[in-house]
Length: 281
Image (cartoon, rainbow, N blue to C red):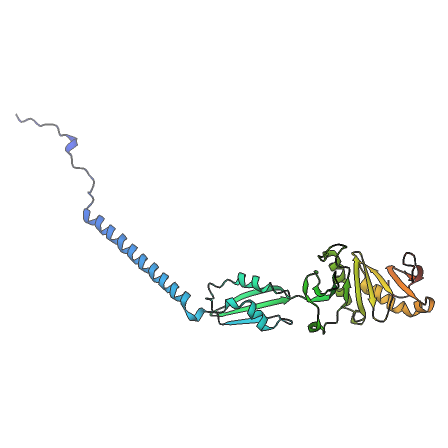
């Protein structure tokens, strides 16, 4: 009688489809082709970029300058001469701006690229407010922040600006910012009254809380304090004829006290005579 041996499951065919070798090779080939194409694209992009950077079309050949009054275009171009011929995509405009700010007349500058090969430069120049008389008697144009612009001389003769004294504390050579600010506020406020501004010949800010002003053809020292400059100076101009009738030789006039002014004659700076003010404060 035939005997049936039990089947050994270890020898059963697995119910999994075997991986075919040719399918794996196809995957490998596809990956290699993809990598090759990506490499060619990257190489082409690199070469195109290199050609673009070397292209003469993108070399800066025109620089437009706006906002200058004192500086000539030639002076500005000399300061940023390194820009010309550079590739506009690589040009270091921050460096060019730093070079331009080395000019004492330049307060600020904004650079903008304009493709394919131009750069626009917008300049803000410093505005002189007066002629500073510094220790040693040297004269300099200064702006409202007390920044020295240039030594004053014949080339600036067209400027009709007041002389400013007392900008440096005793024993110092640096301009004090608070004193410069006081002088600037006097000049700026008087811009609204050109008739008064034209008459101011000298401003002394030795006391940072009290601006002292001299007018053309008037020897009286006018103490204006630290505010209401137009009102106080205008009040003095209105009152001056009456003051001269009462006081022949006026040394100073203190205009800081509203409805009264204090008038001192020569040698009486420590104490003055109170006179009602008929105009201004």
